[in-house]
Length: 464
Image (tube, rainbow, N blue to C red; front, side):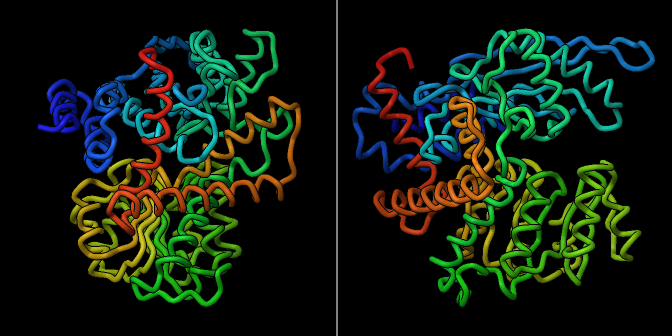
């Protein structure tokens, strides 16, 4: 048995019943590294495969906070510092009922390779809590964030571990978290990213993940589009004439919709935890502005969009449920909601309705069965760790600006983001070709990210 298979078997045996998402992430990455194992004996000799699936540090803590009625609540807090071989730990904080250690570990593990792909010196980490900010007042969210940071602050810093936002942690939450950090540490440093521009944030950070997703998708279409029958006439508008499905209506999804419209696509789907809407005419112009205000400012439910614009609303359904049940035609799928949202059944439906491209805006939104179906059908597939790396890329750029006490222009940040997404695409494509799997961007992304981290671990010796 190969070393990689031994490690997968051990992880499955140890965590299979309690941390299924983490096991899934490990299997997906390590399975694709089999060509690397054959070429690089030094990684086996240094036991890199087993070392890289174990976090450097797992931090868990209780968070005690008080609601507006004076009732005291207790939540769980997590920070997994997974691998710091190439730089300070970097990864978001997620506040959601479903958060548990297995989810945080899977996200942190993915973050190792995503961060490495950007070319920036960032290790991988992730954190969060099972606290749900939905329905809470600003004061309740503030009190929770202060309580959360009163423990987390001792573990983070600009050259140690730099958290950011994620699901449930937007501009409001980042502000409260950073306010608590400043008070506790008595310093203004780049210890958290995703800050508002007024107190040290970077322009383009809110847009970065969604825009980066479309920049990566554009590279796929411009380079490989003819393989799936898409001939791009204008490289700046590679989605012209294509029908696009976006899931979610959070930060990533909203900016993916915006950039997809700019690139000539017609986005007809969006969703939230309550259900999905289908707008055959396209979510653009006044309708997109309404959706953005609804979700970013009023934090309302997407059903209000359906009611205002008289379009179908599917309560309790995902975008992919609706496509599977109604057979609605789309050519580009951009899953941007949450992990494992596209199952094998959904993937079969996407093939049937004519999807040519799947690029992932969420973390691990496709199940292993779904990914196999994409590949067997010849669909262009952009995996999350490559396609949605724009957010952490601009977080890294925010760290650089903070270290220099500078704030770059929007144009400069956008140009750097475009360059990073091009670099990620080329690294993924070239690694796939070099290791005998041309066109397999998932394998290429895993290999390229792993090689950078593994070489650093060997160079640093036993401590990593």
